[in-house]
Structure formats: C-alpha cells, structure tokens
Amino acid sequence: METMERLFQSNFKVGAYPFYEYLRQHDPIFLMSQQHNQSSWIVTKYDHVKELLKTQSFLKDQSKLFSTSPHDTPQDEMTTIFQNMMLDVDPPDHTRLRKLVQPYFNPKTIKNLQPRIEDIADQLIMEMNNKKGPIDLINDFAFPLPIIVISELLGVPAEDRNKFRRWSNTILAAADDMETDFVEDVQAFTQYLTRLFEERREEPQDDLISNLLQAEEEGEQLSRTELYSMIVLLIIAGHETTVNLIANTMYALFEHPRQMERLREDFSWTENAIEEGLRYYSPVDFSTARWAEKDMEFHGKHIQRGDLVLASLSSANRDESKFERADEFDITRKEVQHVAFGFGIHFCLGAPLARLEGKIALEKLLNAFPDIRLAEQKPNWRPVFLLRGLDNLYVNIK
Ligand code: HEM
Image (tube, rainbow, N blue to C red; front, side):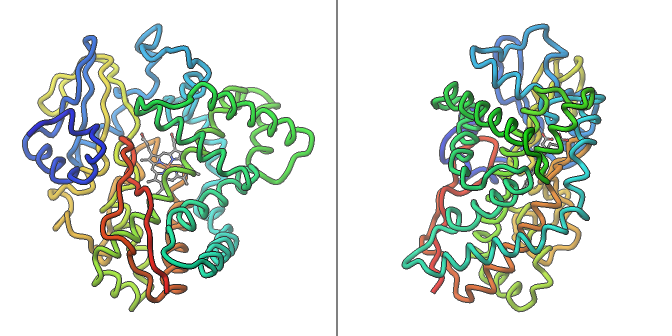
C-alpha cells in the first residue's frame, strides 16, 4: 500500500479509515516523512495517542529545541503569533494562559449561553425556511451558528464573519502549504485586531476581548503578543471545528437512516449522538505537532530529538481494541470515550461550548424539519490535512 503520498491527496479523506486500520495493524507508529535528518511520525492507536498527548517529553514549543526554528520564514508575524498561542506552549506559560481564559469556557458559564444559542439557531432556521430548493446546511446553518456565538463571546462584530472565514482559511491552507495571499491576509487580520483592541480599550464592553485587554494592561499575566495569539487561536478554533461537528454528525445520520429514526423517536439520545458523531467523523483529524525533547524509543520506533510527532485522533477513535464495532455509527453506544477533543493539558478549551452547540443544532434541525434529507449522494470532504469537514452539505427540507 502506498503510504505518505496518500495522506496529502485531495481524495484521501474518502479512504482514510481503511488506511488507518491498516496502519494500526501493521505499522502503528508510522513514519510519514523524513527531511533534513528530521522525521515526522503519525501515532494511530488509541492507547499510544493518549500516551503521546500526556507525555511531557513531547514538547509543544519547538523553539526550546532549536535556537532558530526551521520554520522561520519571511512570514514572521504569523510565526510569532503561532509560537505564542497557548496551544503551542508548554508549562508554566501554558498554565498561566489557560487559567486566564478557562473561566469563560467552563460548562457552567457556557450553559448560560443556551438561550442565546437557541435564538440564533431559530433565526437561522427561519431564514432556511424562506429559501427555495436545496439548501447548503453548512453555509446556512452549521457555519454561521458557531461563528455568531464565538464572535459575541469574544466581542468581534459578527457581520465581519466572512473576513474571518477568509483569514482562518488562509492560515489553515498555509499549514497545508497551499498557495494563498498569506502575507497580505495575515497583515489584514492583525490590523483589524489592532483597531478592534483600540475601540475596546476606549470603550470596554462585557466581552472576552475587553477582559483580556485589561489583563494585558495590568501586565505580567498576558503580553501584547500573547493577546493577539489568544484571539487568533480562539477565532480559528471557533471557526473551523464546530461547523464540522454539526455537519459531519448530520451527514452520518443521513447515511444511517435507522440511527436517524432512533434519534427522532427519542431526543434524549441527542447528547450521545453528538459524542458518537465526534468519534465516528472526528472534526479534527490530527492533533497539532509535538516535538521529541530527546532521543527515545516509542513502541518499537526510535524517535530522535527534534522529531515531529502527530496523533491521529480519527484513527484512535476507530481503534477496535478500544471500541467494539468501531466502524459502526451507533448513537446508543455507551460512554464514548473518544479523543476527538484531544487529551491531557491541551484538552480542548471549547469542548463544553462545542457540545452544547452540537446538541442545540441537532435538536433544532430535526424538530424544525421532519423530512430533512440529503439532496446529493456524495458530498465532498475538504482536502485539508488537519480537519475532517465537508465542502457543502445540500439538503431538501420540504
Ligand atoms: C484544543 C478539538 C471546538 C478552543 C483542541 C484540541 C483538539 C480540539 C483536538 C487539542 C489539540 C492538540 O492537543 O494538539 C476541537 C473540536 C471542536 C473544538 C473537535 C469542535 C467540535 C473548539 C471551540 C473552541 C476551541 C468552539 C473555542 C471557542 C480550543 C483551544 C484549544 C483547543 C483554545 C487549545 C487548548 C490548550 O492548548 O490548552 N481542540 N475543538 N475548540 N481548542 Fe478545540
């Protein structure tokens, strides 16, 4: 079976799961590439993935290993923003940054957003009802819902969401080495944020940006660069993930009509259906990079200091040694202990929000549209390495 090339083909997502199964059985710590004496590995088994994500000798901050990062490029502004994201740093910086934002994302705080999220969902459904012909569930529902929510939470004008969509697409495409107007877009993004910060500083609002600005002004807790990094991280995380959770789970339900029926008969399965959706079509295929702090053996492979190691969350979530009938979509599966939100200290900050949005989305859509069904047989998976998401999901609602 051809290996490395496969991961980067645009239709890779279609055959990904059998490929992961092959790797789990024959080559679970898979050497994806080797360049300039540095190897890149993919970890595919559930237990190994958890071990990787909790082991401290796999670092997030690459700069601790090299005096100059091999990824230093003319796009320095973005490099700096990425290096200062809490997702890309280790303790103690990670602990300090996470503590600052954690209170805003606790399940209890998030629960207070429920009525507002329901209103937004109702509004989007009303607009869908006014449309004729097939509707793109992504464009008209799964995308705007989480964007409006995160924009309001941060204090970013929701009407600018198309700009953010473009910028976060650019940043992700750059991570995949695809051609984009990277430098221009990054500049536009940071200039936009600078203006927004000035506005909020003059007139603070009851939003996360105003609160973080205050933390930055009081010094010590948060540097200026870290502030940009945090907002960019939250915008990207809020833009590129929950949309996939909603659309992928709806798609899995369309593909499995008996499961759809089951859910319609008893909506108390909704939360479980979301967990199963997270496991079955994990919205984030791979963890972000970890770097080996030292030479080490990892389940039979020799990993060298500075090697890059990625966890395949999708593969772990289909590991038959952890999940019975792993390739079956079953919304009544008990205690779905998936790793779709990662594991360890970088476990997704937004998980309670994503779960709540997913639950509300499913309930609202299925209640509003008793006949909702796919309008095309095979929607396309986006050719983005890190994520599993559909380009469009056309449905008929009447
Ligand atoms: C981290 C998945 C939604 C904010 C992560 C990680 C995963 C993940 C796998 C860990 C990455 C790693 O360890 O390399 C998801 C999925 C989502 C989702 C599947 C939706 C279904 C969100 C939302 C937000 C968010 C809505 C915020 C608004 C974050 C942040 C981190 C993170 C800030 C970094 C946490 C840290 O470094 O401590 N997410 N995410 N995520 N996520 Fe999410």
